[in-house]
Structures are given as C-alpha cells and as structure tokens.
Image (cartoon, rainbow over all chains, first blue to last red; front, side, top):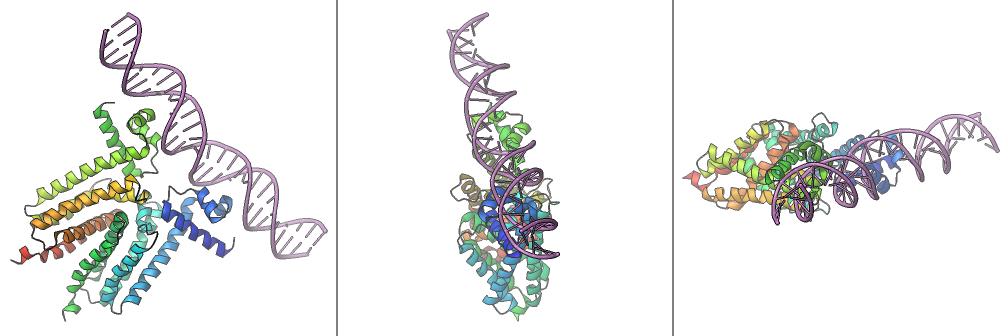
Length: 190
Length: 190
DNA sequence: CCTTACATTAACTGATCTGTAAATATATCC
DNA sequence: GGATATATTTACAGATCAGTTAATGTAAGG
C-alpha cells in the first residue's frame, strides 16, 4: 500500500469513527467504506486500536493546525488571538457534520488511563494548553499557565455544550467569559 | 419482578454502563452482573436503549439531588451556592470510580439528535441551567440566564478536564473563573 | 519467459452482539 | 389440591464483532 493510500485510509476511517463512534464502527465497515480489504488494513495496523491511534494522530495534527492558524488569521496580538479562538470554534460548530471533540469522545469510550487511546487523547489537550500558555505569557499574564488552563476549561465546556445542544451559542458565551478574564491582564490596564 | 428488584437492576446497570461505556457493555454482562436473566430484563425493557433511558433517568435524579443538596449544605446565599458547586464537583472528582459525566458520554456514543438517549441527556443539562438561573436571579444578576449558561460552561469544562486528566484541579480552576463572574454582580458592589 | 516477493482478496474462526421461543418454576385463585 | 396466570430460565437465532488463513493476483528481477 502506498503512503497515499495509507493516508487516505486513515482519513476516511477518521470520518467514520467521528460520525459513528469508535465501538459502533466495525472494521468491516471501515474496509467497505475505504475500499481497502480488512486483511490489507490489518497488514498496516496490528489492531483496531492501532488504527484508532493513527486516526487520533491525524486529528491532533489537523485540528491544532487549523485552530492555531485560524487564531492567527483573525488577530494580531496574543490577547486578540486568545479571544479569536472562540470565533474559530463558532465556525467549527456551524460546520456541517460537527459532532463535538473527537478526543473527548475517545476518552468517553476508552476510559482506562492505561489505554494508549486515553493517554493520547489527553496529550492533545496538553498541547493546546502549551500553546495557550505561550500566548498568555506574551500577553503579559501574571500566571500564564493558570490562564491557559482557564481557557482550556472554557473551550472544552463550549465544545461539549455545542455538541449536546446542537447550537453554536456556547462559543459566544465562552468568549464573553474569556473577555472578562483578559480584562484583568496587567497589559490591558496600562 | 418487584419494584425493588427493578430498581436494583437499573442501579446495577447504571454502574456497568458508567464504568464500561454503553456499546462496550453487553446485555449478557448486565444479566450476569445483576443476577437477572436476559429474558426477564427484556420483559421490562423492550430494548437495550430503553434500559439505558431508565438508567439515565435514575442518574439525572440522583445527580441533581446530590449536587443541589450539596450546594445548599455548603452555602447560605445564592452567590455562595453557585460557588459551592465547584467544591461539590471537586468532592465528586476525588471519589473512587469517578469517570466523568454520564450524559456527556451518552451523547458521545449516541450522537443522533433524534435519538431519545441524546435528547434525554441534553435535557439533564437544561435542568441544571434552570436551577443555576434561579440562583443567579436570586443573586441579583442582570441577565440570570446568561450567567447560568456561563456556569454550565465552566461546570462541563471542569468535568471533561477532570475526567481526561485524572485530576481534580479543574474544579479550582473553574471556581476561580466563577468568582470573577460573581464579583461583577450588582449585589456584590453594594 | 520464469521465478520470487509482495499486495490483496474471499472466506472463514470463534466470540459476542441484541433479541426471542419454548420450556420450566412459582404464585394466585377457586 | 388443581387450574390458571405470571415470572424466570435455558437454549437458541441471526447478525456482527475483531482478527486470521489460505489462495489469488501482480509486479520486479534475472
């Protein structure tokens, strides 16, 4: 299997798992929808879990790239970038086929902390916090890590509510809280 | 089957679904762990989904009762009650067997809005908002509904992060944001 | 052209899935 | 005590689960 076909297999599997859930999506369906026979899939991924891990790696890369780029496109200063995250989230919530955060759902189905799927899903969130923390530091926050964790809270809360309520309102609600948090920044008081 | 046995069946099924997930928990396991044969279970619940709905009804009742009571026990004024929610959440996060919010996980596995499981899970969140809104109104908030939605955001974010990080820190982080939100209340400025 | 190595396939395994049918135990009423 | 209704059990259907085996197709090297 070429690298291209392998990449497309992972890409199509991502959509299936994202739309239907992990346990609810059988490998027979993956084979049927990707056009790659089950045996070929198992040549490249020893187990279903390994395919899921590859899917999560792709999702992590795609999502972080998309979110961080969108934040930069929408704003110049670190403060504005942090706020722009919620506008980017709103765009995502409005997309056809938005179904919440794939990593939250992965942890919901694979709850064991020793499970690689669980660990890798939380790793994605830590990478997000790292980025928020850099921006918070640039914005002159007294405690950049604490502010970054608060932003993660708002982001995850907004995603969960948006997915459950089938509405994008949570993006605005989270942004309004974020604005209050940033209003207390030393740099803003100057 | 007596009402007692039926209630205990639902109670034990709740633990199984909460610990293992919905799709990952088969009806054979439910029958084995509850000591009630599968046929008897299907006499009282036409499908697995109906059993899950009964489980979610119990969870909704138990969780709201517990949370609202704990908020009242910990505080006297509406403001303090809203803040005390995060202390109550921290207690929950520290419990053995804490595995996140059952309704978030239900929506993660049953994503179709037309699915009763999905709808009933979001209904639980709306009941929480209703309660927060009453407290927010009593606390003199200008826009009680908006404040209630912000508190829901913080609560859901905290639960998701606590479940994924296997840590209770998110409770404090959410509370620190909530304190800032309440500091802007008119009644507090008096 | 032939051989070797590899990629891919259909068909299958045994376990498990939700849900059911027929048989057995139990309780209630006369 | 015997008839009737209800509860419960065992055993099973048919589908689907993750994963494998043995056979087939295919392309490169000599």
